[in-house]
Image (cartoon, rainbow, N blue to C red; front, side, top):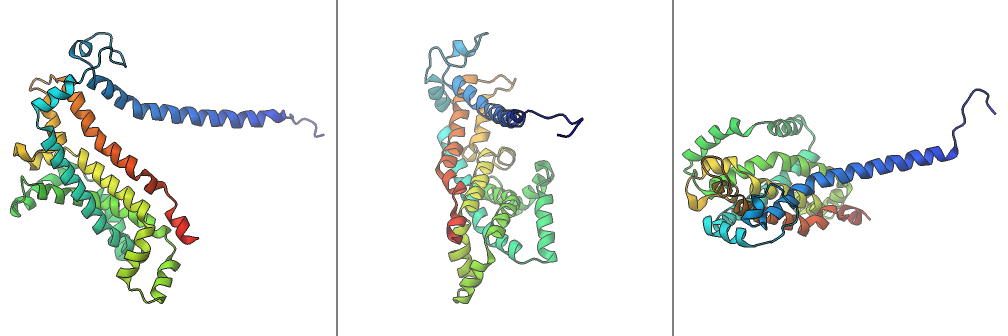
Length: 289
């Protein structure tokens, strides 16, 4: 026995491990609560009648739930038309961004050179640009192309804005694909395009799904570019139409606004629920085996 050294009880180490695990679970629970609480409160507001919305003692669960806020929201604003515009712009932007980013990310990951390193650095730096800095050049370019106040121009802006992060994200997934698979395809006589389409792209399915989800959600929720570029009410997207529930003095029609905002949130949640398995699946591991 060593003199002068305190002997720790054997259960103290296990207790610390349990305490650390409990702390992590507590932090995770707090984070989930931080994310879920606003959605639950929005859900509550959407089904509350006007007297409960004006109550000085709000409750989480509506005492007398109603669908009147949804009916009023659809009666006051063209939500279906705006949702169709947003769905078209976000869907096309996500598709085009993925189609363009996939081969470019493969080149950035496989062809190491000063040019690709400079391109990677530029991709990361471009994410720091604020919207206000680029809106004037974009507006001038679109005006010269006669694409101002068109969904086509808005889609182009969304694609350009989503491409940097899409390139960076897909490049990380390409680097995770073993080059030996592409070399084996080349030995079998496959060209670069055939290798990319038939070998690499299927293994990038989780990354492509995550990139498409990012591009879609970014375009679906975007407000500033749509507000500046679209002036005709028939072409406005859903985030812009939601502002019409707020009056000139800042007073909001809270019930219909909450109902419309809830409907605007659902497509992103549904899309994530549909492709979450694709994002987390072990496609690469199965292919390597």
